[in-house]
Length: 486
Image (cartoon, rainbow, N blue to C red):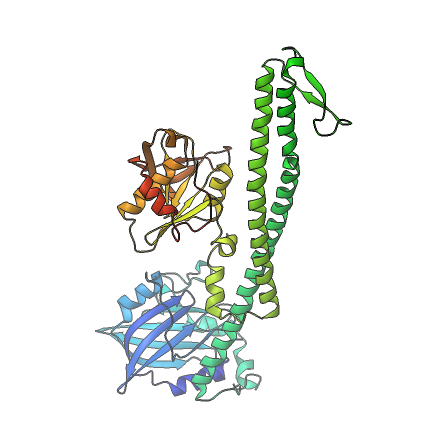
């Protein structure tokens, strides 16, 4: 709840506002204003909070963070009252409206702080009541530049007589040591921190539950796809049977019915393509075997990653629900501030594909469309660098950015070499590689997963250097254990 008029009086009695010099004004957040004041040989800081429901003013004993770029209203205040002196300060008619008159050079302005939860505002006027600016510009109330503010109108809109005549607004006995300003400060900051902590924790839990549902659905989808690859050994057997029975086949045959070479009681009906030779039919089944085997390995690897991410998310949910983690407000704020892609926090150290190091930089390599798409969606940011072999199909290579650090040429050459190595261009041993920031990639509408069009790209011509490759693949440079490409 907001301060009542008796509490505002108590606070003002403890602050030597009259004849104070205004050294500076800050706006940590839109509803908060901070004034740095000096009077009687000491400095002090005054906080105005116009946030509903905790409208208040009181002395501030600690620093609040300030945005690097000042907001509109604080820029106005700095221009008009910084360096000025407070010549009068009072609460008006027990109505939670504080009037502060500031004189700067030969001009006076008045700050009207209306500490009403439902209509809080700071309005700056000249001596005649003409509004110069306001924290909240409200045209319907006439609270805009050039309008006119009438404190009598505000007083008349409330039941001021009732508030003066009864004792329903006592001075609260707030807990803690110190004077009334100090106890008010602690009470409201503790209250706001508790509310923000609950709000952030609820926000984080909702995101984690959505992530849990996404991972469960994704895992089920992967398991269904894996079932389609389970019988990949059958394709190899069919290829072998076609080759061993080629002498029985005619070019127009559509089927080969043959006994199993390991179980004579079992027969196979193997479909053939009459448009190609028996040997080509066998090779077709071998290709399906290799693709299914590779696909199953990739799916098993991806499913393992999904399970790892899911366990991380479930542990995080349990910690938040039971309070075992004991996060500070700042820790929660940072975690929520990472954005919607919650899985980044869970699997940042286990991206799909390959991972290398070059100096202080990390390089990620996608080996197929699925890995390329996953890296783009969940593991890279706008300022990371994307590389790809020009005019050849191949994997995406990403250099993870480090704030404040430019990418050295050796790291760029390392990544470009990997882009050639994991592309069809590796056969020629050299080729062009183009690169750009991830934020300059444009996804192709209705295109295949991971398909992008680069803009603002640059070009490198690179020769594959075996020494460079060995250095990249030597531990600890190779973060993920993988066999070298053949």
